[in-house]
Length: 198
Image (tube, rainbow, N blue to C red; front, side):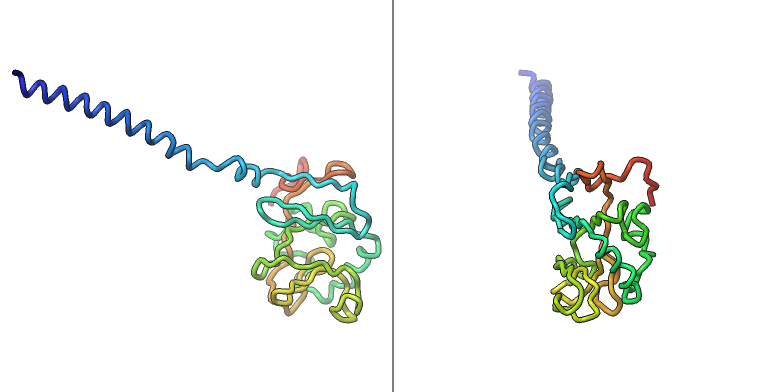
């Protein structure tokens, strides 16, 4: 009876079987750490049909788990943007991280008619409500130029998503990366071809 050789063989076989078992057990464990198809889809671009809304209407979408507001602004709404500038904390959108370079303009958009915003207040992340009508009819006073009002803590934003002075929100609403594909579609999550990155 060759006991040391037998033990050695038994140890090699047991170790090999243990290694195979460990490898087989590790495969599903490692695979479970990959993001699910749903999680991968949430990070992808989202298309919004621009053929539906009437002028002055608000469309809502979701991108990366965040609400997206798309507004088709009327000429009258665009005219009110200049009048609201004296009421704003950052009328020129100087905080660069709040919008891509191609949306750093008075309209905060590629095309003045279309506004695309992440619909989360920059104070604590509540969803501000649209109050597009100007003046007393909005319930926000005679000086109200139209825009968004956050009912959580009273932050106000104009029709370009710019924050008013003396409210809890520190910065303008965020403009996500987006592009317009003709007059019928916006793609949220993709910059326009040739857009300069900030």
